[in-house]
Amino acid sequence: MVAVGIMILVIVASLGIMSIEGKNSQDNPASDVCFTRECDPEYWSEIPEMPRDFETRKNQYQYNTIPDSPSVFTDAYWKQPEWVTRTGEEVNNFYKILDGMMEGRETIWCVGIYDAEKVLRLDGDELKMEEPRINPEMEALMQLGLLSIDSNGLHISGRFWIRACPGARRHFGVKLSTYYPDSEALKEISGIVEGGVISSPAHTAMQYITLIPEMGHLTLGTYYPKLEYDYNREVNYELTIDKDIPKGWYIVGINAGVPDRSYQVNQSIEYGFAYTDPNIGMSAPERQFKIFIEVM
Image (cartoon, rainbow, N blue to C red; front, side, top):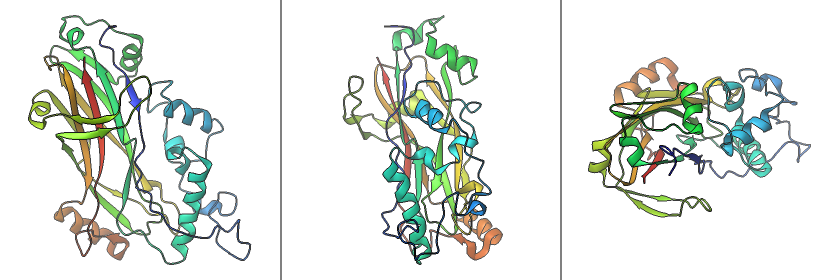
């Protein structure tokens, strides 16, 4: 087994996109609604211009051909709604949802996370060594300042993105907190990871793994009257794995749920009726970012 054998894989993007039937102005000439960049540049004025190499960078990220780096995959890429899509149909659905928004359909409180899941594989014996060998993937992350190893274990800096579901016309507050599930379903990656339910006793994971988001709360922007810059947000985190961690599977994640009451009050004062308080008369489904860790 080579070095600490780290392998980080994008598995699935859980976006929580609502299924809303709407009309697309390009399909219906009678409609005066059009949200494309060509039809309404002002609607996109807060979003960076899409780089010419957008599709190349998007493929590099989705297929993990180069390490995720904030200096490479800048906000010019991940601020584009197309960043989280994988098919042309998903892009068309995005515009259909915006058209539905103009017909009076409004997303109340709904968030999505991208990437929703990552897999990390470690050589546990190598990690325990005084001077672990460094493989090329680890070297690349170290050069970017995203990975380090010391006497306490392995430290990884990472990120994911969270956004208000398309169609949101009011600001959403979100609370971010670490959680340790006892089990979660893992999708199969052909030739790499078998799918199935992964069991990971929470009390054991908590002894050897810490995952800390950089912020406790955040507020997401809206999709109308223009696409606000903060309609999606970057969440950075620090993952630490103890060098003495036993072999086996572990799961740790960050939960995106309803904010604390004090945060809701402060945001309601700032935004007034332009802020959605999910504590009032609604049940808000939570979303999770999960890291599956296999120590071999």
